[in-house]
Image 1 (cartoon, rainbow, N blue to C red):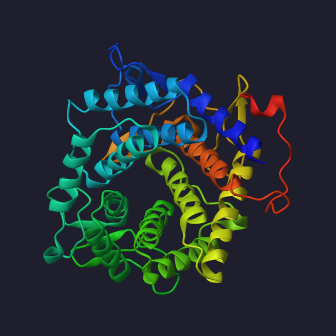
Image 2 (cartoon, one colour):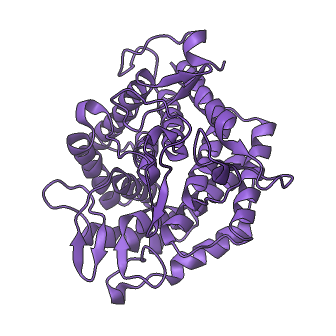
Image 3 (cartoon, rainbow, N blue to C red):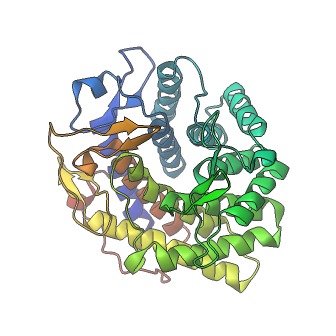
Length: 387
């Protein structure tokens, strides 16, 4: 079982490497992911800059290094960080707190898990979040600077980072604000945010993921029962409302391409790190694990194979569509990136599939022989591509 998901995660990694890695402006020691495949000239030259997609590419590289530590991958992580810094005009920050939180999480894990440390960058980013906390304005931290929209996609990942950065008190304040402000009393799912005192009632998979991640991180670090209870409630809500047939629902391409992968990442965190101190927590861990493994099996079953490597669908419960050159590319509109005409063209969708395979490996690794939740076929050389 472990080897099956290791092979699939390695195949997903190899697909990204082959189709998306490229030096930034031919600068030595740099790398970024080209944001489309097949690529346009503009994307090949990194005229298009999706800061947070690159942060998730970095985070997935760290996943891979944890799965299979290799000196060459550590060098790839170094190149990705350097490319990000250079493309962002030699800064770590931008105007979006959610973007910065994703990079902070990836950089923290690059240091703690892969030995590629950037302490000054982490301090710079931590100060952004700590100084943006404005309870007097109704927050939370805002989505972006000079904005009054306080949302889960900023507060969730920033809170996870601050918990890992030993700012537990602020991380707990952020989780309490989310719990008091953004939880749907009927479904127990997380609303998107609050603007001018009014709820923005959209419910996205990645909002569930980041709030789950925050509660699990705090449950593990503080042993405070309220965080375990919130995490359990959210796992159950996701299983009931966001995973038809046990498969995490998709949100198309563009920014939405990352949403289901983010939820898979933090379901895996819950499966592995929610404290095992009572039967309810154990049940929530099992549910989280099953959601990850069923989603991963479905995404794998519905993938396309291109040159022996997987191309994942934007929706993990239907066939992936093979993108072609031409057609409408992903476009940035008011701080968000809309999908390409074929969502599978977007790097976000493919990184999400890779993230899911790494999540499946991380939970399957903990499964004792004879206690598998799913009937998964044995790998073959043909289907897994990379050994």
